[in-house]
Image 1 (cartoon, rainbow, N blue to C red):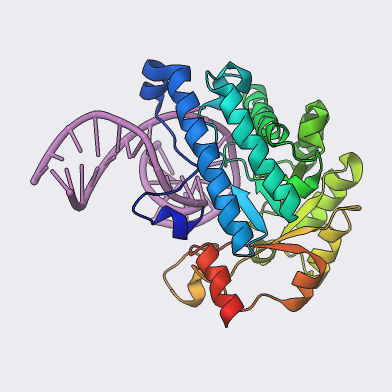
Image 2 (image 1 turned 30 degrees about the horizontal axis):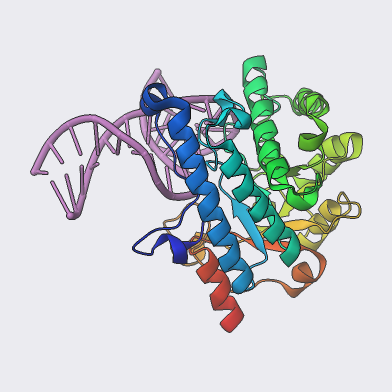
Amino acid sequence: MNRTLRDRDDPVRCNRDMRRATWESDGLPYASELTRQNFADLLTVLRWNRDHDVRFYRCTSTLVPWNSQFDLEALPDYDEIRRLAEACGALVDDAGMRLTFHPDYWCKLASESPATVDRSVEAVEYHADWLDLMGLDRSPRYAINVHIGATYGDKTATAERFRDAVRSLSPGARRRLTVENDDKPGLWSVTELAASVSDPVGVPVTFDYLHHYFTDRGDTYREGFETAAATWGDVRPIAHYSEPKRLRDPEARPQAHADRVADLPAWLRERADVMVEAGAKERALAEIRSA
DNA sequence: AAGTGTCAAGCATTA
DNA sequence: TAATGCTTGACACTT
């Protein structure tokens, strides 16, 4: 989100949503209206980003609320929504910006439950539909970034299920999928992802700097990044950078992200497009640029 | 008008 | 066995 635009008297935001009861009573027409407003505001955010030299944007997964329940073409305002989406994509492309999605925590492609896998595959697919609607390349340049996010007590079997889910994706979804290292020691490190997911089925690994602290397996940050970077082929790698909130607030969980960042490593910026993950969002970026 | 608790989706971890 | 966090807003309800 963009805090500057969100905090205006007339807020600009792309995550208008509704609850189940509203979906059941108001259905597609209301979903269409929210989607239209979300895309209209996405265009405003992207213009702001272009004008302020913010070249990397993580878009909300609530861009099209309840999209698991319908196809985009079914929306009453589809034509207008498509025009707005195409304008968003053209702006991103013309300005050389990157735009990524990060499906929510319940997107579990390697779940032991086939129904959960089906819903998760469907979630990745509708994120890909949005990127297609915007006319953006089917490439991890415009990533749909997920975590495996679980082991189910058996990493080998979990990796196998993840690979099967990847193989079941449509080309537009599969070619944009990336997988990120987790933030708990028992879960997935960059080395494990590179070996069990990237090498066999070609999914690039997003290196998250803070998460590497919890899953480093003895590798330095640079070593972890190099392992991940090698999985990106011709596409410039994505890295996530954030600092622990605990540096400023001793009560905070070790995994919690700080509102701001102080030190964005130069070596990382040289090799990757870096997404700053900070509570203060674009303000955190402005502050390190002016420092 | 402003504040509070709960809400579609899944796991690992901690209490 | 039950909270908690992951992110933040929608909505119903209370003040």
